[in-house]
Length: 621
Image 1 (spheres, helix red, strand yellow):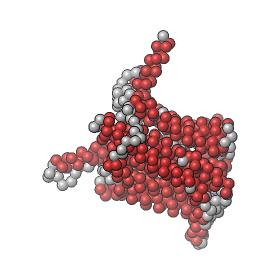
Image 2 (cartoon, one colour):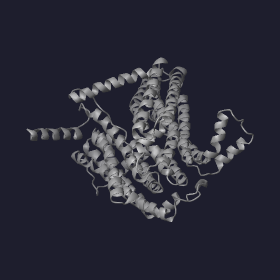
Image 3 (cartoon, rainbow, N blue to C red):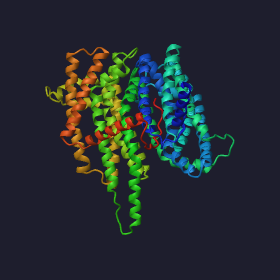
Image 4 (spheres, helix red, strand yellow):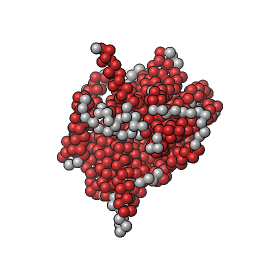
């Protein structure tokens, strides 16, 4: 009896993992659970990093060494997977499994060869790359904490982790092929295994075996192999073979390159921005780069779960509405202007839904930054100084959190119109803003203890603005001081760059299709901003009272503070939205109700619905 039940369980597990996920009732629910679990495991990973290393020079070396291998993966692989591989694989599959297997084999070999060649270059020139990252005096910053010993260790870590983009490159091509076959669960498991591998590296190699950040680097490599290995059995069962000695179809490879090129250019800009931020953070003192990366990982959680998901989900509908408007125009010869009202309605509705979710998330992270950082990271070597520095960066990431989702949606509106050029051009403008902002704003915040009393007195109107204020301000943004608050300049600069990108993209889109109007844009946005402001004032007042009047030194009191203040803030936001008639409240209540019914259906074993491919992403760092 028991053996029969076990065998049935194994058979059901195989069916769930290897079957097509368009007719399995529980598949969509499990996919959502896997994404959420992956993000939670990602937070557990950075918690372990913080517990073992704190925000320290040693961990800074690891993050800096990770930058170059990560750039290789993001530029060579991630751009091509999103922009070219899945459409090309889908086209090949329509002709049969054999053509797909052929192009899959060709692309995998080319990606592997390119990754190996770049990896060899990084391996040979790891020391010069490390010296470039730690060069003293970049943009006026002094990387005094990074001497010859630290540079040599960074080169060692870089040589270890250069294995990562080679393995991840092959694994990402496998992911694209599996998704085209409508097998989504196993590819969704791959990032989870990647994070688990890194956690094993941190706990076993770095901590128990005492290898420090060298063990952490080997953990990254171990995680990349798990990312690939978990997908190999399903790949083999689908007859996706890699024929090493077969002749490569050069035409198909060139087609991949042509389709991927605009996206690759865009990613190059993003990676340059990350590299410059690494250069600057290295010169901000011990632990600054780690604090920046910790804050970045936390702020990206709501962005990836809410903003990016909503934007990606809107892409198919936006594409269909735009294509249908084009077809109707072609059919009706008398038409001089296409009807894009359905496209506009979908875009506007999605934008308002996104803002409805991201605005309260923004308020949460700004008001409760210290409890959030303390709960997620506060243990072991991660002390109060590290907490304050990371929380400061997290608060200034608030603008980036809000703008990130908006940019993701508007970019996909351009993709729906088959325009990849405008997003690339605008992203280059954003890159310039981010680089200049990173330099000048880190300067400004490095004088935090000089300018803060003056700014507070001006806000309180207890002192007039001195005549020399502008000259002093010019000094603050062009010279360096030693405040640890300087790292916040990197976070605020990212937000300003994304805001410029969002404004420019919306401006160009509105010139083509009128998406900004009082009824569809400004009125609902102003309502949400008002309700968010009320939410902020309520939460901030409660937080200050709690912080000054009650004990916040224990985990229980921090959890209580977060739960009570956050709960009251959420209730305020929902109540305020109902009062001022924010329509998204009703919509999301219906979504929650449907979700609960879906969960009951899954637990009860009934119901059928289809799920679609998820966007390919880089594994969480």
